Structure formats: C-alpha cells, structure tokens
Amino acid sequence: MDNRPIGVFDSGLGGLTAVRSLRQILPEENLIYFGDTARVPYGSRSRETLLKYARQDVRFLRSYDLKAIVIACGTVSTTSLSTLQAENDLPIVGVVEPTCSRAVKVTNNKKVGLIATLASVRSGAYEAKIAELDKDVSVFTEACPLFVPLVESGRIRRGDVVIETVAREYLEPMKERGIDTLILGCTHYPLIAPIIGDIMGPDVTLVSAGEESAFELKRMLKAQDLRADENRQGDADFYVSDRVEDFERIASLFLQEDLRHAARRVDIEKY
Image 1 (cartoon, rainbow, N blue to C red):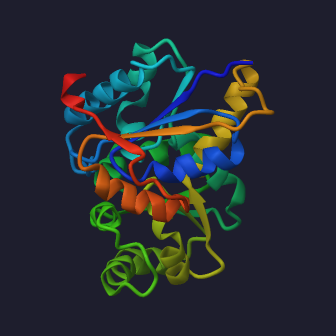
Image 2 (cartoon, one colour):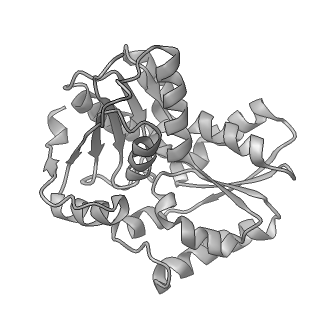
C-alpha cells in the first residue's frame, strides 16, 4: 500500500481527460496535476524545446513526493518519454503504447486512423508501435493543429460552428479511407469526442489516449504494489503556469465540479 500522490502533466487542459479517467479507474489515488497553460500548444515545438519543457514539468511535479507520473500529453509521450524514463527513478507512463495496444485489439478491418499534433505525427511513434504489435494494420495519420487552441478557448460544444467546421475538414479525408478505429492521439481531443464521433459515425471506434494511460497506470501500480488504500477517497490538486481563472472555468465544465479558487499558479521557469 502506498498513499503517495501520482503526478500528471500536460501542455494545458487536455490532461484533464486523463484526470477524469484516473478518478474513475483509481478513485482512491491522490493526484497532482500540472497544466503548462502559459506555453500551450506543445504540438508545433521542436523536439529540443519539448524536452526542455517536459523536464521542467517533471521537476515541478517531483518537488512533491510522488510514486508515479503520467505524461498526459501525446506530444511529449511521442518525443520525450524514453529520455524522461531514463532520467527519473520512478515509474513514468506515457499514452502511446497503451493507446496503440487498444487500437490493435478493437480494429476489425485493420485500418486505424490517428489524429494528433504535428509533432506527434512527425515522430512516427504511433505507427512504429502499431507495426510492432501487428504489421498487418494500416495507419492513416492527420495532424490537427487547430484542435488544441480551440479546446483551450472553450470551443468544445456541439453546435459550435467553428470547431465543427474545423473538425470536418480534418476528419472527412480520414473517414473516406474506411477506417474503423480512430486514435485520439492528443489528450485534448476527448473534450470534443462527441463532435468527432458525430462526424466519423457509429461504425468507427474512438480510442482515447488519456483513458488508456489510466488503465496502464492501474496495471503498473498493481504489479509494483504501489496502489493506495482502496477504502479511501483520493484528492486532486491543480497547478497551471498561466491564469488560473481560464483553467478553472473549463476544468469545472469538464470535470463537472466547481473548481473556482482550486487551482494555483506556478512559475514553471524556476524549474
């Protein structure tokens, strides 16, 4: 039994999808969430800049006595995971491997789509992992650079002409390829999953990176005897690198609880 908290970080709000999944799958665990809202989006940054940001995010989280870290960011998972794991002496879970494993299991026609940030698509990490798991699966990729800033701006509701127009432009070519499984390769994307699902149709299974990373963490904690007392109810602390008000507004909407005055601002450049 280990009641120390789990650290979770993302470039902004997207990691809240992982937080929501972690609360459902591991309700007894304490979480410390950091959203780098001052430097979002990460998806268009160079690998060197991404690694610098990720190291700072990890150093901030490790100022607490953590037992594990979840990288709730597809971009960092595809570009920096192995380096961060080598540099740190605690378990670090990314989103790529568990998400790819799930996609390979659920596809019937062996045609899998991936939507992600430009950096994640360029990395080729998802295609490489899927090829390793099943060489017969074809992967079709689409970079969706406008999704993250739109989600961060709160454009996440059905009926919003802006997000629906952008989503159709990105997703229609993917739909025409006949995929039956679509990886949401950025943890921001489940915030607009209903819109994505409407466009792709009921025959396409959506695989969420945040949810699959939560299941992977549960397996890892159990294997290493790091689970918290299952009779307790865990708490969550939220930190951001920019205005807390903007984060709290959208986080309250997504997590379905009042987070006003709950988040704290951090000067991430100190780390």
